[in-house]
Length: 225
Image 1 (cartoon, rainbow, N blue to C red):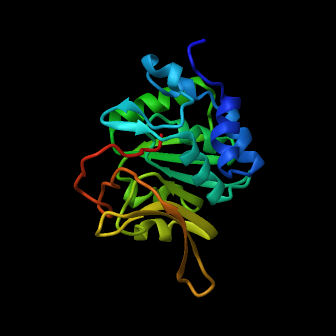
Image 2 (cartoon, rainbow, N blue to C red; image 1 turned 90 degrees about the vertical axis):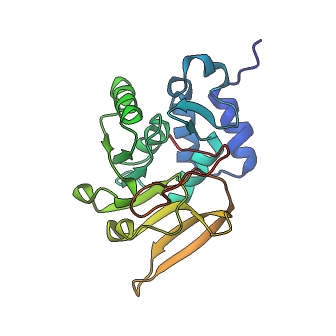
């Protein structure tokens, strides 16, 4: 035995045991082969409850974080989703198991290119990978039923609100001036104001772009992908 665990064990030990209940999210996490989204030398750790490096100083988020954000997004089978921060493409693949179409945007071209090739090879025709500033969204593909970002900004970018469909949800970490981060679910209320709900403290890389945090901070943080 080399200590590696299966996707079924990952779901039962890390997700169900920690309160993830959405059966569609659990099924999607079982279905997508996470080991194909990590470097060869880390395959034995693919299902560990930890972020793992994927190159370009980025990481693939721990499975629980991916599942928690997708459960909060409450996706339906006809949903159109904006995934900000493609990374390895793993979260986009899991999202595509739940939604009709995923637009995934990545600011680092080499990560975007590798993810797009990987997703095509796995048959994910419903995912469009773009290279660009994720804080500006993807207006040519809007509106979105959900916008999900695993990078922390000082507030919700205005472009995302403008590109959100009625009754849609935005899920992202918000970072205060103190450095404290909280995972937030936001939706637009009847009066047009944003209604926010906190899912608790988290730690993510900065959201870099015109509407994000331009400077990196030191330390290991989660990065979705």
